[in-house]
Length: 256
Ligand code: CUA
Image 1: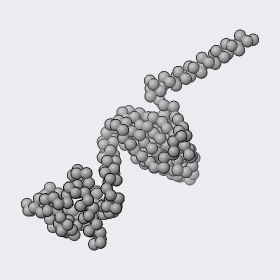
Image 2: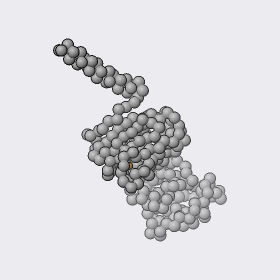
Image 3: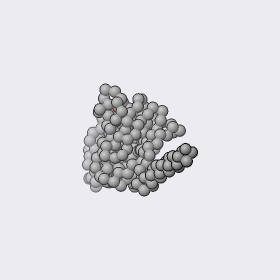
Image 4: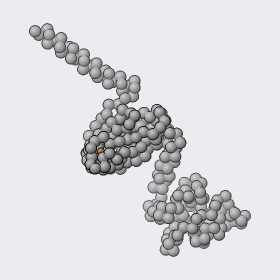
């Protein structure tokens, strides 16, 4: 009988090696990753989209009752995305319909998968672990589209630029929605950029010129249609509190 045992052991070993070989081959040839549970990484408390290259993304999904963050993700077709998922509360599932991604979001752990989005379109991300009354509504979307990816990249850049402002000034400019039209990085929006604005000489629609000093800025906030810079439409009236006008001007000054 020892001969039979030997043959069984050899057959079993060949089988195990074959399985490992198939896994290795699928990883190398088809880029199919085996979902991994990363126990040594601190669970992400915050959702994040990091773009490493034109078609390389790292996305930290955070699941909680009953949504995924980010709720919307946009990548260019052909992108490879490293997905990490963690949960803030109970166990959730994370399945991307139409792909082979099916991860668990387990408290205290971070799960990982790599996925390549070749086909343009909209992919639905759903929770497939029962997690409470609104489980069936827990979903998010991935848009695979050049245009959507470009728009999302621009929005991320703007958000990053906003973070570089001194926090108090940023809060104020945010609070009055100034940054919706006035960039702080020199790019032109619906209004002139704040970067380098203070102290500069502006040409108005009337052809006259004016220096953007405290007086001019105050006037522009009080009566936006009085002296409009050439090439722009008059700003809609913004109800800045009298106490805040000086602070808004200081925030613009800081961007000189
Ligand atoms: Cu989350 Cu079901």
